[in-house]
Structure formats: C-alpha cells, structure tokens
Amino acid sequence: MCTSPGLTTTLLFDTTLLRVELEGRERFHRVMEDTHGLTLVPSGAMLGEEPLRLTVYFADGAGPASASFLVMVHPALAARQVDVLRHTRPVALYELAERKAQATAQQCEEEKTQLRAELDGPGGLRGLRFSGLMDQNQGVKVHDISTAIHRKPGNALHTSSIWAYRAHHRIAVEMLLHNQGTRPWMFKDALLRCEKGEELRPLPMLRPDTISPGQMNVLIMVEMDAKTESAKGSCTLTLWGTDGRFITLGNVTFP
Image (cartoon, rainbow, N blue to C red; front, top):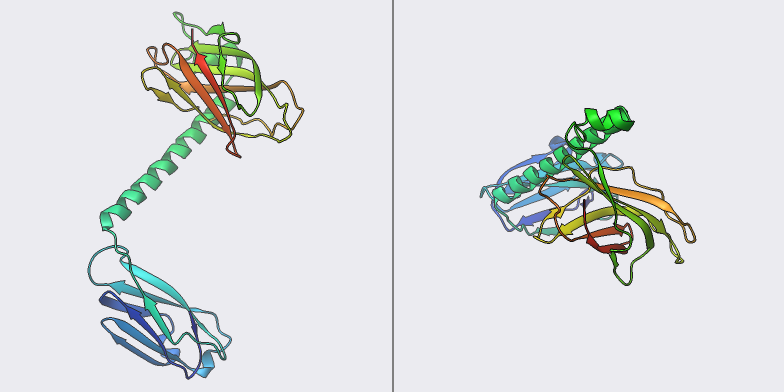
C-alpha cells in the first residue's frame, strides 16, 4: 500500500476491528483509528525507508482473524482510500485445511523414509527377505501379460514386454516404453483401478528420465502396497506424464 508524506491514506473495512498493530507507529505524523477504519499520514522523515507492516485484527471471531499490509512511503504517490472487503469463513475450515496440509507433509515424510530405507537396505534375495516381501511360504510370482493387455487408443507411448508381479503385500507392473512420437514424455504418477472399485497408488519410486522422441526400450516398474486379497480380477493401470498425456492399460491381472 502506497502512502506519501503529508497526504492522508484511509483504510475502510466492512468488518469491526478489534485492534491495530502498526510497525513504527511513532514515526507517522498522524494515525487515527475507529471501529471500521484507519487513517495514516506519514512524515517526510520516512522517505527511503523499508516498508512497515500493518496488521489489523477483526472482532467477530470468524476467519481470517487478521489481515496484514505493507505500508510504503513514496515521495508523490499515495492511495487516498483503500476499501477492504473481507470474505469470512468459519475458523473450522482453516483448521481443517491446516490438518490436511500436515497430513500431506507427514505422508511425504513417511514415503521419503520408506524409499530411503529400501535404497539403503540390502539388495537381491536378502533384501526381499529382510523387507518381508518373501518368506518360507511365499516368494515372488511373475506373469507375462503382454498379449492380454488392452491398450487404449491415444496412449502417449507404445508399450511392450509387460509383466505383473505379486509378492507378500506387494504387486507391481513392469513394462518397456517406446516414444514413437515427436514430443518428450516424463512420468509423473499412476493409478491402478480394479473391478470392485479398489484404487491403489504407487509407492515412492525412482522416476525415469524424460523419454525423448525416438527413444525405445525404457524400463519402468510401478509398485504398490496390496494385501493378499487385493487386486484380484481385471484391473486398469493408468500412467500420466507431467504434460497430462497418459498411458492406459486395461485387463491387467496379477498372479
């Protein structure tokens, strides 16, 4: 908000004010408050200084509970009247949004920890055994589903050599991608949707680099958490890139 020495700037609010906090109040020539407004007249000594923060708090208890402005002092330009319209929302909505943001951050942290543990852990058969994906009763089952797959017209890339895997509480789909078009493609995310409406999202993974036009035989493997009874019957796997173009594979089945 721009002000100027000797000129009056008035802020008018459509909501009753509870209190006003003005940084460097003593340096203003005049500050006048009432329940729905604030008038500022800066002094000439404030020219060239850093902007000052103005925070107003509202009295009705709804959200947002406050609003902040940066007050700049210009040698000539000033906003003579600033009308502030506040769109209230229940505080509970802000609290809900904060909880969702915290849950998302927690999920990201857990996924990062899981990925780091898998990368730092032992590889080969020891890695499968120590991670609980293989035991004395169950190993890794593999099934070639290349010929059974239904490829959706308009897929961004061509696919081949498609294999399905199932281990203890894990499933995965592996494929080769071929960019026969003229635009690069980079994997962003995936979703597996099965017959009973079950939806599974991929575990954290090392994403392949951008697949350039003409690039062939790029291996990608999408892995998901799945209980023994999960992902039964025919499923549809959709992968999409950072540009929104997708690859959809129908009739994905797991051993």
